[in-house]
Length: 241
Length: 168
Image (cartoon, rainbow over all chains, first blue to last red; front, side, top):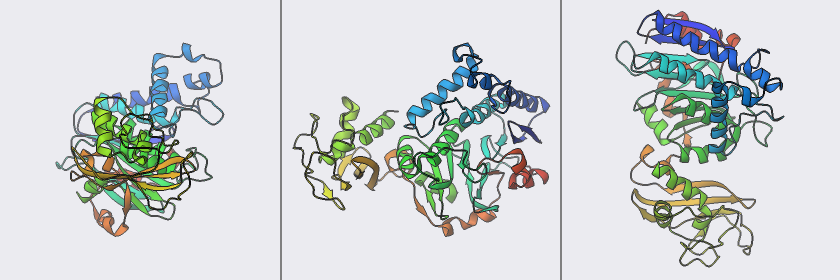
């Protein structure tokens, strides 16, 4: 089956082999995350924490768990990923979507499905024709063209892509006027790792790329500002099919 | 996890590599004892007990592009460690120092177990577009790209796939 719906300012596309209950479960996960974490909703729990009307210690355990997870990633990425805006306000946008996707994935279980949320992908099993799920990565220089096709095999279940092309400078880059990489795709076994590291590499540039590919079991493809590509050995293997 | 810890230690102790310690020794030390303390900002201090022969100079390293200034602060440049036998095969790394800080650790000689089995070899290298041209004709299931908004979705390739009722 196939369905799309809007949530959290973007669009969810779900391909799955099952019934409507699975879709309802996925919708519920995203609606709850939207209610709690969206800063564009002034009444969201996170907005109330951000404006000071709700103390962090009084926030729900879910919010505190996501914040703690984000802080953990800040440490693991040497600060390249951070849940704070430059003015210090908590902003969990960098992790909430992936976190909700992981929750949706748990709700969907072990079957055959492909979940795409705004260009980030989490899959399970295989396609209806028995083939691996293949993620086509768009070319940031030509959004009607594909740059590369990445089959999610060998334990790789997630592919997240970050960049400055779609939402302007939504990722804060450290100490530079613009990002070294216009687009970074990370394939990993879980979506939170993929998404956080893609964001961190856009933010931290080549130095962070070198650090994080050495520390984490991930496959990475980067696109420079001049269109040049870099790929880790694992990414080359995936691409080679 | 053990390998990740070892790799982290290798990077953390790159300053020790500078002092000419074999990387294999560093890996072994990281596994069996404690992490070393080098931060890369105190070049060639030889302050750890693992160093053996280090005396604070860059003995055993080759400053391929580095200057030859005196010690006391880290010299800028690229410094190669010695090739060492590791449980994963021969390995050689180089550290790049800029402004007194390590800015990169490169693997010059990869082990003979490629890919993700040895993560220090997991470096992103330039890839030609001609190597991936076949991607254009690949049978993709879904479209990944830098996050699109609700509005951006309508212009996205994913939208086209969805409208086509694409099923795997």
